[in-house]
Amino acid sequence: MVAPRADRRPGFSRRAQFGVFAAYVVAITGIIAGLLLAALAAFDPIGFGRLRSAFDDLTTPVSAGLRYGAQGVSGIDDAIAAYVRAGSQNQALREELGRARLKLIEARATAFENRRLRATMRVIEPEVRPVAVARLVSSTTMSDRRIVTITAGYNDGVRPGQPVRAAEGLVGRVLDTGFTAARVLLVTDEASSIPVREVRRGTPGLAAGNGTGGLEIRALGTGAMPFRRGDLLVTSGAGGLYPPGIPVAVVARTTRDVARGWPLARPELLDYGLILPAYRPPLAPPPAPAP
Image (cartoon, rainbow, N blue to C red):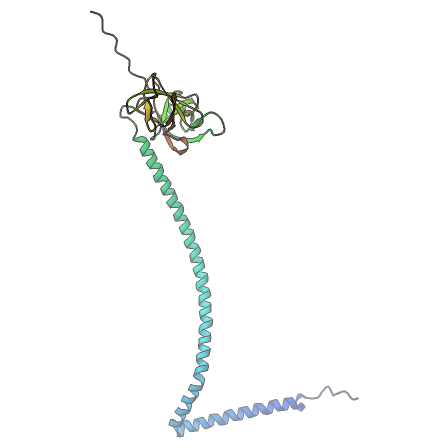
């Protein structure tokens, strides 16, 4: 078997010859069509216009389809770009909304704190000047004692024994002090005992803490239980220390010997407290000399 010659030219291939021939035919056909169209446009403009209109009718749907496809692709690009922009804008809006929400919460908290402080300041009697206004920051919850810590101490003029009150009523008395903080014995502690009176008839009594968040009230007189459910008890001022007229508790229920009530000032709900100077009852006038 004889191998084909390596120097054989591609022009001798039938496939190559057919390709060259087809190219010549297409070129000649294009030239002839161009000449015919030129002659038709020169000698028969009306016929050429009709032919052009027919060509336009044939190619318009194709052109429209290609245009719609291009617009669709462009619309998809625009939609993707708009989605990306909308996503970034939504993220920015969410961040701005979060910042606005934080500012709103801070503003509401500040307004609430200001209302509480104004309510606390309104209870000051004109003739009584508070020693200090302090924030209640912590209270004992895991021991038998009922004690709360305030943010005022010896440097602020706070001394042991001074009463502490809030807008709602009596909180307790200062137990001991540091330089910048102090501990307050609450009215509900078992070591707390407060002279009180019932505002309806002025019946005196003694309110002692029971160590469980409530008070036990005993009348100082003898006879039937004078207190009734719903009675309001205020400090009487007897014995000094607590100024008279500070709300202490409301009677919740009574038995034959003792009444039980709930304090009006609940430490877990308080923000500020007023430290008042210890009350000193006026001295009784000396007896008149005998005639």
